[in-house]
Length: 333
Image 1 (tube, rainbow, N blue to C red):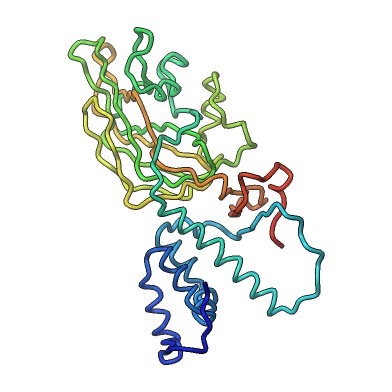
Image 2 (image 1 turned 60 degrees about the vertical axis):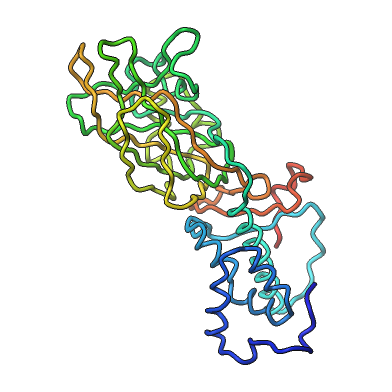
């Protein structure tokens, strides 16, 4: 419960605003920031007016900066418009921002268990035998299914530096991703059991500019190449490069910090080739299985990508489990 300011000593009255702000910025747990805002009216006002909850979100997850604005969607009907002063409008907007960023910060550091967030495949930069060796096979955890080898294979190249990529759609437009796991394929049916790994991997996250549904996995190679073209995506995060081992194991690549994937698209970039196929003396990359490990922030948080300029809008739905489809179009004016 918020306490009255009339009793006790408030350090905000003794320190300069800059010194007080430095103290509040030392709070790195969203719950502590919320508790501090509940101490008194003056503390809450100071926390809200200085956007500490937004600053904390940005420290936890810098990708938050990609949002141009935010909206709050509620099930209850909007009250009739009233005449308000510009000051009252600003105060309400700051309170709304504080509320949204506080809940978002809590969701970002939640201890809920992580899981594989891949919903379906979009496409691969190349495929050797399409569709038998397609990216769709990388959703299978085993290297053989129904007594047949299961893997994706790139086309062959004489140049070992030619990269490849695998693009996936996640199960939510708002996912916090901790790590990505990739298992190179061991060709147990070839002499010497070669492993067709890449030299390194890099990960891209963002959203599609294609109409909803058009980036689904396709069964035509030309359509596949169109679906994965970079001009059809906005990438909001690019990871550093990670070296890949030439081993037939599910290799884990931990991201430097939990990453907010805004838009639900992940591209696995495979950099460099290490293994030649004996039959044609060309370099290939083959992947058996891919996982994108994280947590969905939906349905409480959603992304609106309908802005003509392509800027993402964060939507907060505090009563999401009870919302109907029509409510998704409303916002807190």
